Image (cartoon, rainbow, N blue to C red; front, side, top):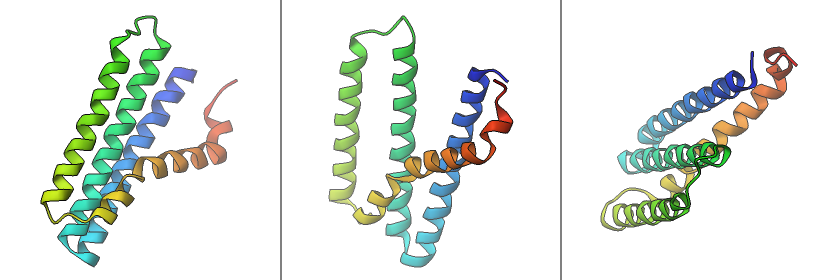
Length: 128
């Protein structure tokens, strides 16, 4: 398996783990603490997944020769848009702020689980 294929499979696993943790956590919090906590965790998970997608796009753009200076401006605008949307949602709705905060770590947890997967199975999946 080539390095590109290995990277693509790793990213695919991270997406699947992110979705599983986000959905499972939102359902568990919905059952335990109610809809405000379930919705907060789901919102935080969605923001976390979106942020992971943006980081992946930036990494791919940096690796290509077609990187454009406007990419930095667009990345900054994304943060402003994301922060503004989160502020409005949390200020004017009953969604739980702590639950959203914990949901923001879903992609980090998925990456850590992918690292553990690579530590256990990595030398069996890559031909060097």
